[in-house]
Image (cartoon, rainbow, N blue to C red; front, side):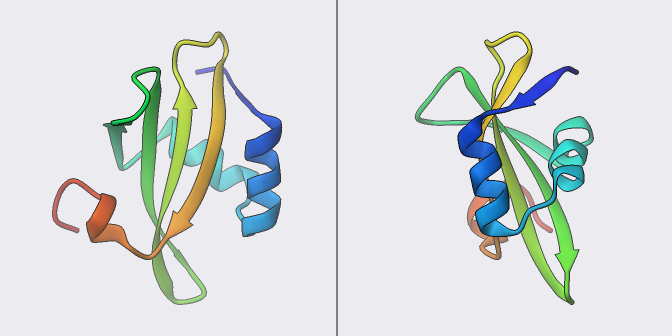
Length: 88
């Protein structure tokens, strides 16, 4: 899958300390893909990761209707059960 990172996504990566490799791995090999309730063009790719002994969920929002696909935003959260759609 060809993807590009929007300027906003790049800014969020830097601001939130998320590396490009984790983003690409999440998009190419997600633990889960869910629809965005607010935007039908967007798919949320999710992966559970561990960093400094803490488990978090990386959520990458991708506009699938663009060619190539565009990462529009992303973030990591420790609220896994709020967003992950099955038991961890």
